[in-house]
Length: 205
Image (cartoon, rainbow, N blue to C red; front, side, top):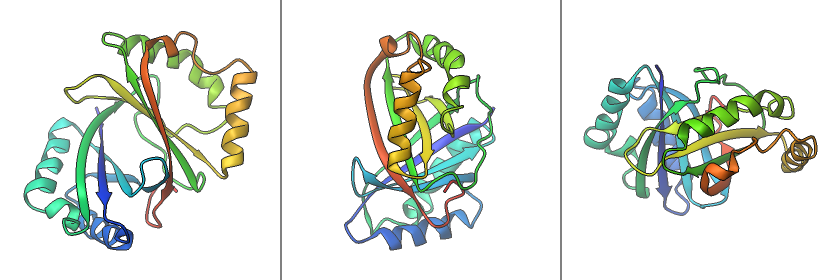
């Protein structure tokens, strides 16, 4: 089953173009899996770039992590970053395993939700019931739960053409009673959201 990996770079001010160049050169080698998206945070934790990649399995994802840390000087960006993090995810089983890339909007809302211990499956079940109607309101790129050895969380990604479209879609989903998932919020510990802008070379844009 596919494993998704996020590579989050905290970059120095004014270094965005250099970081983008390093990322493109590194991914051109084919060592890092299949890039799904690359974004720069515009609203939220600033000066961060995130790359989302897909790997065939856990072994492939671990091999990419090893290469990033030992061979490639953090995607060739070591001179332009101040922090670096890698996380691993698996798609909710109620959603297609493969992400459909393409042009969906210039604003990507990436949301992280902490999940109470023991409540991951209940969260997935709640989303399975609610997502079909919610996805009719606006496109869902994916929702995936963390595989790393820490308190459970999941990530969900929603693209919008404008921020006004985002606000209208969220308001409509609530007004129509299709969102949030019934029982879903009761399983959460915290929520974090950011608006990310796709890089020119991002497959999701």
